[in-house]
Length: 355
Image 1 (cartoon, helix red, strand yellow):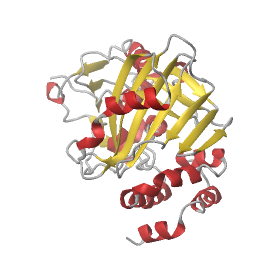
Image 2 (spheres, rainbow, N blue to C red; image 1 turned 90 degrees about the vertical axis):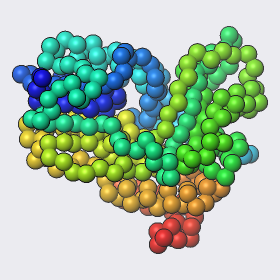
Image 3 (cartoon, one colour; image 1 turned 30 degrees about the vertical axis):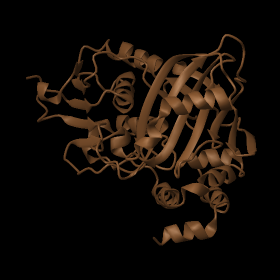
Image 4 (cartoon, rainbow, N blue to C red; image 1 turned 180 degrees about the horizontal axis):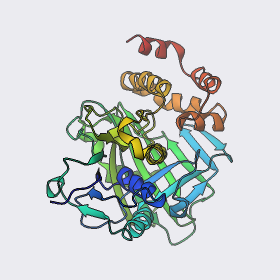
């Protein structure tokens, strides 16, 4: 059986981002890398969107970016703008094509379907597969989105809708999210922040059809693409192991209050690349403890008081959009954190703090 210097378990966003980061900086020269990924081929299956608060390697995979956005609750809409940090949407198909075309030029990089196909005894392992499949008693961000196309101009592609809470809540937190890629094409997504054990929330197709036809008032359209996903709003359990680092969601790179993961993955990949020669001795990379603390309180409030969350999200964005974006992207200072905290219902959050 072949032996490898490095093994990446999971050839998704985290695994491929790390492999690409190592490859473009010549850290795989004279090294053998195995990527464990069961899929037979890569096709577009996800859309990753985020505010660009730091540079990354995938500007050429951006489908669209925006400076203007809105957030809605019943009878109220807040129109916002941030020129400092554009909101970007990455097409996973372009991302997979870019990375794999680069990795395929290195004859020391191999793909396998199963870890059992190789000898991993002397390898350093980067694992991106979390052990959470059956943990449905915690909060998740679960969603379904469709890309639709119209024959006539319909969308304003200069502004996207970040959260539209003017929809059925079903005793949870529910919103729609619309990214207009052009005047005739858009991604429309239904998103829930709730436990996954309530199947009544998973009639995604009906929710989206009803929203498009009765809320957006769009009748003549066709669906060209569909995606579904679920992001855990909790940290996966894991045990420390010698010569192994967890990456991606498995490594705690998901911001729990938002589900944002992509840029955290890129920063973690850069950190690993910078320390690859002594990676077994490198300090653990993690999201700042203050965000972990604040997110924990935020999610306690969300779980106990879902009915107030639309107003909380709406009020949060009454602060400077730039400040809120920095906070949601792990880039805010303490004064900026305080300005957002002061927008929150204080007694509700104090009770959650001492739960």
